[in-house]
Amino acid sequence: MSINSINKQQIKLGDIYVDVIHKDIKNVHLSVYPPNGRVRISAPLRMDIENIRIFAISKMGWIKKQQLKLLNQKRETQREYITRESHYYLGKRYLLKVIEQDAPAKVILQHSKIELYIRRGSTAKQKQIILDKWYRQQLKRIVPGYIAELEKKMNVKVAEYGIKKMKTKWGTCNVNARRIWLNLELVKKPIEYIEYILMHEMIHLIERQHNDQFIAYLNKFIPKWRHYKEELNRSALGYVDW
Image 1 (cartoon, rainbow, N blue to C red):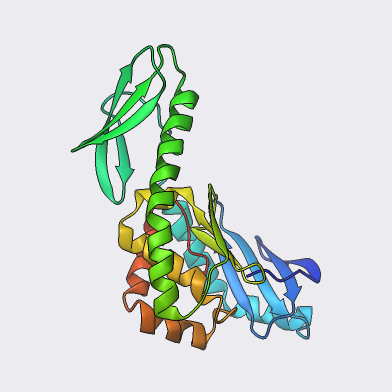
Image 2 (cartoon, one colour):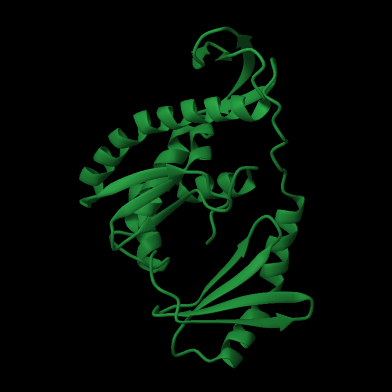
């Protein structure tokens, strides 16, 4: 959702700091962000800081539970981009096969392997760039068809979409521009998870807030959304922040 922040403050509750942002919204939104469990409350303009403090105190048990989850959450290990290293594509595990050659770089998907053809002496960073480029191409190949299908199903229109790496979110929606951004890491998840994130962001074109109406749309369009959300939050690659 793209709404300009009006006022930013911070409150301290014991050893927990809570960022407070006043916005032109109707309901209070509480979020705990990876990787360190940063806490943020988005509150309506009319809500004073003392009432926000009382709200935060009432949610302290939930906040600490979420922070503990993040603390124990598995993290994706640093990739070296060497042969027989595990990589993922659309939810399936593949073994990387690095092939050096004196020719332009390319990536080929072969059964249970991802073949990465690179020039001799390429660094791990250069290999990552090549593989990420391939991942981006695959996601660009998949997404337009799903957007077109969901536009008909939901009776909405997406002006444009983009793909980028995001540290804490699987997707975002700029409602005013009708633009959706997807996390490149989504290409490593099962296809139904990609559809869920697309639908989640497209629902914002109908309902901006994460309110009861928003949940009703999720239940209508993708009944298993809670399962997908839970699995994405459990993964090492990102976080659904509501």
